[in-house]
Length: 323
View 1 (spheres, rainbow, N blue to C red):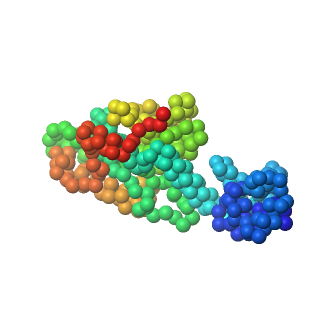
View 2: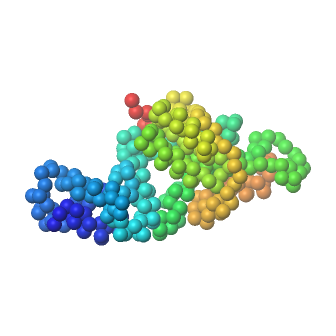
View 3: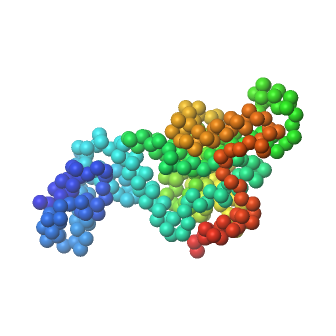
C-alpha cells in the first residue's frame, strides 16, 4: 500500500473532511506500522501530505481541499456529500479555535456579556434593553443549515422609555406609525486579528441579517486590521464595538448601517430559539403597556450591573488583556 492509497481508504469511510494528521491517525494500526518503514519522514502525516498534494492541483483532482485553516481533505468522488459536512466542519473548527482563545485569556467569551449589557443600557446613544441568546437551546438543522443564524446578544430600544409622555400623545404616534422601535444584533469575540477577521465578521453579517443594526463586539483587537474593518464596514454595514476594560465603557469604532427588518429571518429565529421568542414576547408586552408603565413589567432581559457590581465581576472573572 502507498500513502496515497492509505489516504483514499481512510477518506472513503470518513464522516467528515480530515486533516493530514487525522488521515494518518485514522488508518489501520497494522497499516501504520507497515507504512512507517516506507518513509524517511519522522512524522508520517507529512508523508500523507506529500502523497495527496499533487492530486489537489490536477485539472480533475482526486482530492479536494475543504478548509484552509487547518487544511482539511475530502474525496472528489464524495463531493455531493460535502455541503452539510462543510457547515458542520466550520462550526467545529470555530468552536475549537474559540476554546483555545478562552484557555489563553482565562475567561469565557460569554463572560464578556455583562460589560456590553451595561454599556448598551446606560449609553444615551443606544439606551438598549438586551438579552443573551443561548445557542445551545436553539434548534439546529440536521444538515447544518442555519448554524450561524443565532446572534450572541439581541437588543431593543424603546422610544420615550425614560420620558414623561401623555398616553394620548403616545396613542397618536402609534396610530400614525411615528414610533420607531429598533432591534439590534451583537456578535461577541474575545480577540480579532488577521487570522480570524473575515470569519468573525461574516458570522456577524449572517447573524444580524434580521435586525435594524448589527455589530461585531470585540474585547481585544489587532490595530493593524482597522483599515480592513473599515473596508468591510463600507461594503456590509456591520458596526464594530471594542470593550474597554480600563474605563469599563466600550467604544464604537465603526457605526452600523441602518436597514429594514428581515421578517422572514426574524420569524425563523422566533420559531427556532426559545430565548429569541421570549425576547420578542417581552417587546410586545412592553409596547402594549405603553411607555409610562415600562418599569412595572417583569421581563427576561439581562441584568444590568451598577459600577461597583461590574468592577467586582471583572475582577472575579479575571478579565484582563494579554500583554
